[in-house]
Length: 278
Image (tube, rainbow, N blue to C red; front, side, top):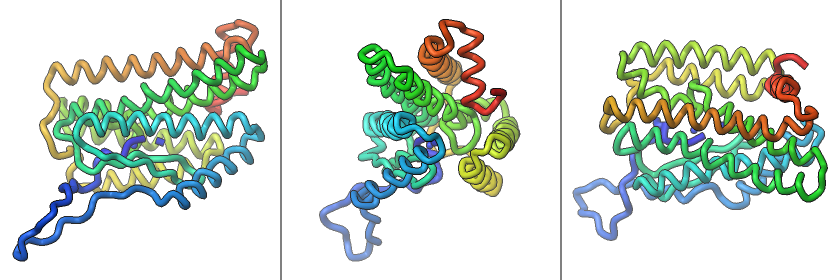
């Protein structure tokens, strides 16, 4: 999740670079974000990993979730820095997840789309060591780790604030009409909150509910910067679908061996991960 507006937001203020001299008549610019303090970052990571271990009962799933989260957020950081929004920083949020925070707003909605999809796209690379672990040991627990990483990135593609999918598809919907974007975000956001409550993901549900209320209270939904062109809107949808297919593909590839090579069995297992069925 990027903070340009995953478990990430575009609501941060643009920050000007530090200057060596400021005229006495000019107000001092706020300093660049130095990032999360290393000690607090370690404590937050341990709290998050411990919480996941306690909930899942598996150290492999806990390690996969933390590793997958870091790689996902680093994908946002790479895109932010590449697009002139950096130097970006990663913040770990205890018991919840992480966020990549930029120093500046994107110059255009297209840049925002690229940043939002860079997380899920790059984040799938985190599954490689877990597939390698399965090949080396034959132990199915490594495949579960790869499946968790695919799940993290897939959930982040849900077009609900403040998840990455809302920043990838929101500008596309706004081209139709701003109220279309607002209605879609509210509807899907409410469904995500309901999903979190009914599947026992209460902390995530509370987080999504707070984010949804925040978006409802905002006066302007569109960020600063140039709106999407028609071509960019089509490319945004294409990239979003490609990222979603890649996440599903990695998840299926991880679960099929555990389901005896059965695609329906893999789908059933995936439903279990998502809280649908057994």
